[in-house]
Amino acid sequence: MEILSIIIIILVVILFLLGVIGVFIPTFPDTLFIFLGLLVFAVYDRLDRVSIWVYSGLFFLLLALLVIDYAATVVGARKAGASRWSLVGGLLGAIVGVIIGNIIGLFLGFFMGVVLVELLVKKDIKKSLRAGGGAILGFLGGVVVKLAVIVIIAGVLTAAVIF
Image 1 (cartoon, one colour):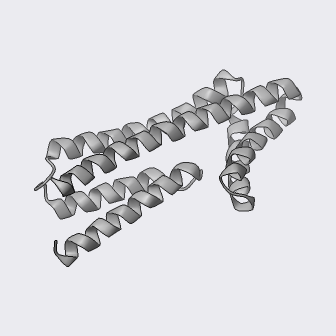
Image 2 (cartoon, helix red, strand yellow):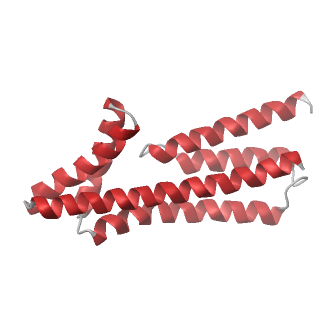
Image 3 (cartoon, rainbow, N blue to C red):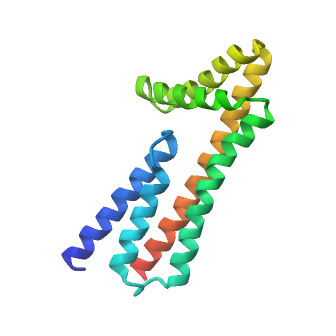
């Protein structure tokens, strides 16, 4: 394997790792990093190891991922009775939570942000807690789907490099 190949593979791995990190950090462009990793590999590969159809399918998966990620959180929160503003509160809470803490801070911050905004809007603790739980379930559903798509894309590219 030549040095350029090694550099490209390292760059793609770094971009994918940034994508995986972004799965857990709201507002971090996880899908963008995965897209860039796939694009770098596609340009380097020049359709030699992976066909245009496979690349097209992987890019479609990424587009679908954007929709699924957003929809999972919104649907989970809305089904539990959350308002739009509570999702904004959840996002802000998640950012603060990840800065103050770690992954646990992210989830607690997201939950607390939703609950606090719902308390301000509806003034009902039971409904606020339910909305926070629904938002967390939706968020976790989005995380699981994103990780599954990242594993699929990484698996296809790894197979292309090995075989």
